[in-house]
Image (cartoon, rainbow, N blue to C red; front, side, top):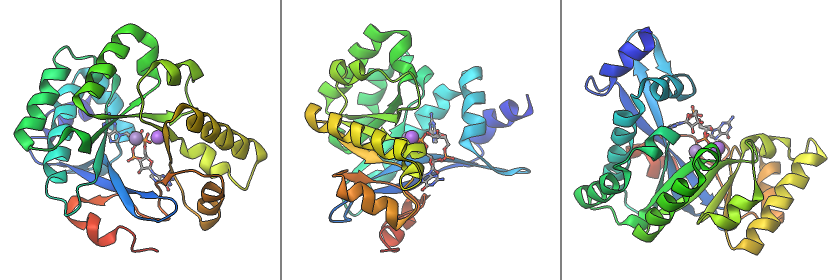
Length: 250
Ligand code: G
Ligand code: G
Ligand code: MN
Ligand code: NA
């Protein structure tokens, strides 16, 4: 496909960059870290969404060099931030399964100088289903390296609560579809409350994604949700703008 052909050369042509969306402590509204989000400025099509090209990259195997570029760039850029907060990187299943993931990550941390505790990897539930034992082994190794682990899009897949007990996640990300439902339907509030109660009893942190309104923020705050991310408090911006825009809307 044309998109695949163009993606092949996108890295070397410098068409990719990362945008960072800040995450905040719900009580203090201090910035606690940022999620790296891949952006492609296509020479003819303009901005192409990762929702469109990441699946193409996964099917073609291009996700491996692409994912490597994302990790490298995110760690290098985070090293230049004025505050030593965490950078969260989305890891696709194919990238997670590559045999040399662990040595590649150690090499990357050594090369960039980023302390392991400043890197967070976001993975989705799908990754835990296919080869559960292998996924567990890799996640435990990453955890031993000091890297933080986050379970992304929680509640949208084949969520099994058993994963939370067996896998060494530091954090759950409540999917934006539930946050959007806060104040609109009772089911969303019930799901958010259940996830918060569960995370508290398991000692896992929570980030609510897609927070767009003051009302959603207040509902999350009053229910004890520790962290939030969303357009209300900060949109994804280039690394250099992160510490100018973060919190600007407060
Ligand atoms: O930023 P945006 O909402 O357009 O992202 C759309 C989707 O693309 C989300 O599911 C997000 O997790 C995914 N995505 C964004 N950046 C990356 C990346 O660097 N690697 C992978 N694998 N997925 C990403
Ligand atoms: O799948 P993942 O959670 O990694 O994707 C995050 C996506 O959500 C990114 O593409 C980001 O641009 C998008 N996003 C972040 N905050 C908001 C928000 O407040 N509202 C909406 N609609 N999308 C958001
Ligand atoms: Mn994510
Ligand atoms: Na998500």
